[in-house]
Length: 412
Image 1 (tube, rainbow, N blue to C red):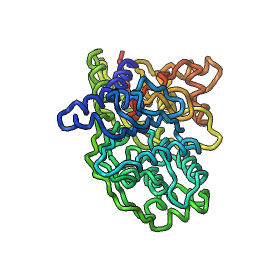
Image 2: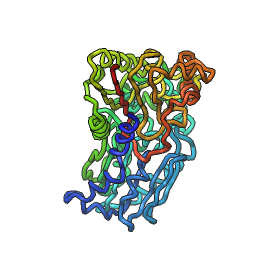
Image 3: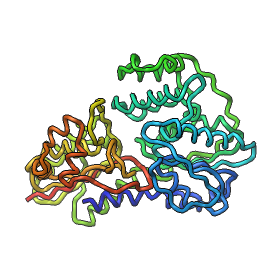
Image 4: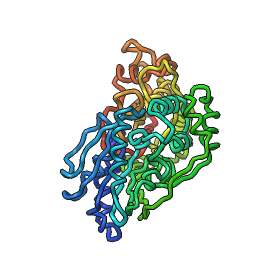
């Protein structure tokens, strides 16, 4: 079952996806652009397959490993999931490099999940501290990614087409998608996707999650004011999603079929919404699968849930929370196992990708001197699952297509 989850990660190999794309006849001329910019959790992997002579910048999470890259690519570091002053300074350097291009030159932009926080330059009228505080508040409120990005685009000089507006060069974008529906404007908040939204859209998100009273005054002023954007001079040569979670789901499902499991449709169409609600649906599907006949059954889900985290939360993330919730709901139930984790190898405030649980997880946690239900209430699932050995540990994977859940059910 963990082998199927690992197959999902392998199917999202970012380096291979870029190599496939640039070897195609319609994109082969882009193997030698004037500048390469790569941002996100998969930035280094995406850039690793490029030709030796390319020049540019790779913007990575601070703790992500950097594979061997062409010597003309400079590695800069930023922070995730909340920007820092150092990351904003690195982003300004990227933006200035792009501004140096002229009409007729070519920019190859490689974007992947994590870009929204890694690549950030505050819009005019905003300081770094205000933008950083907004990110912190948004992260903890449990808002869906598409709503988070409405606010992020409103506060940014690089999102919502900001990179497109910064140059007159030709731009081709290759994307590793970690969002539902592979919406180009949502992947990394769309640095090369022009999206003009009214101030009311961002303010509506702020109101919906009760954040107005928490925001700095200059942030509210920028959100409320009509925004004037410079004209687009760049020539957009296309936005291509070259890898997404659907490919990973198919790979995990095929691995389970090869192991003799019948694939069944889960109650959920995809991983989304509140992590606890999703966990309840997953638990119900497992119970149903275990109660029908003797066939071994499995199901695979991909996407990304949300988790509203209080200020006093412990260690954990949405995937470990979901897995722990299923383990509590199905305590003592034999015949099932579940792996749920982020394909980037990271899950919230922890060093793990997610959780691997079964009907015995709760008892193993108690044997380690903890209580899983208490850990759920304290948003400290990582501590509990690590104590029982029920965590999914991979380290940084060099890719990011969202989260994948694999459940295996073996009745009798």
